[in-house]
Length: 119
Image (cartoon, rainbow, N blue to C red; front, side, top):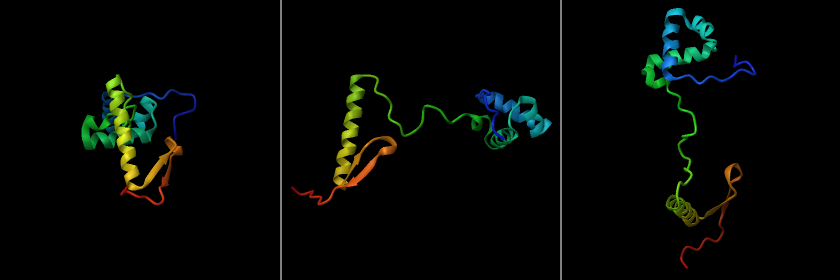
């Protein structure tokens, strides 16, 4: 069962998760879930993670620092480096014989016909 509609999604620190996981070993998963007002599946996941990797495994890995995204340039030099990188990627794609049109989920990869690399 998911979080009840209209309630706040509480982000808990690894230390809080550790305390809840330790309580779950004493009180049981259901008892700890009732005590803290958390879904029992969430408590069970935290207990399993804690038993496998300790407090390090309880750290939240989601958020804005996702891998694979380009950071917003802070100054003119970084903006030029980013533009240079994008142009290098475009040149590499053209050498392989395709273009990318659009952005985000509306990207369209089109194959260039009659590719003549030797001009």
